[in-house]
Image 1 (tube, rainbow, N blue to C red):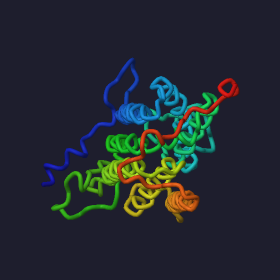
Image 2 (image 1 turned 180 degrees about the vertical axis):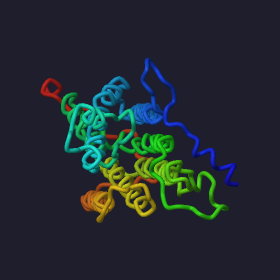
Image 3 (image 1 turned 45 degrees about the horizontal axis):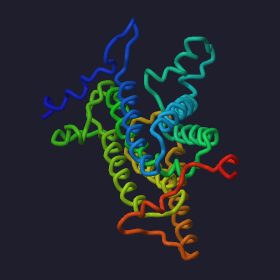
Image 4 (image 1 turned 90 degrees about the horizontal axis):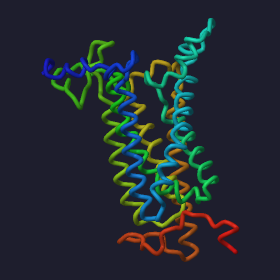
Length: 295
């Protein structure tokens, strides 16, 4: 069994070399995940009659914000690694070297939301309606992106010493630690896809403005809260796991907000739940009216 499973330790982080620069599998996988997310976003936005060109523009606008914030979070939580006393140009390059891996999704999320908000203000779209439509697909992009962690041999859990369980997808072989560990990157991928499917089913029937973005802000933080109990690769934590605390607080507040919005709407006598799906004529209009439109 050990010989059959040890292939997971022979994975190379570099896919190929182009013009003297190594191209990492991490970057390829992350990019693929983004493209899949873009295609799903375009598909979901069609129901609101949002042009695919606008969704592509939104995608191009949001990604830099998300990446910068995600990298910033990764760097800030590792001060001893990046903020050295003899800080120089090479250290600065290390700080921005996203191509080598190292993105914190929990800080990338607010960056992406900020980018989407600014784009909606610019293009006169209702931010909440756009966010409700697109936010759930981020779970799919994140699910795919976790395979980048596989190639980088990161996001793994507790050691697995029983040879009967030393096989993928239960375990993954970590070269640097010469042993098998829980394949938590894979567990998280599965949870992301599961929650995406659940959100698609629920949001197709739940007519509450803001439920889409709030559902995502519940789902992913909840997943992270659960997964933090298993992870064994977070050596930079010396005490309180602040990521886990922030995650559960965000998840609880988001779920509470959804329930509150639904209750308030129901009290007004408005229908909240449509078992057969929200009728097309009741779908929100994502385009804001301008002064020109009102004339």
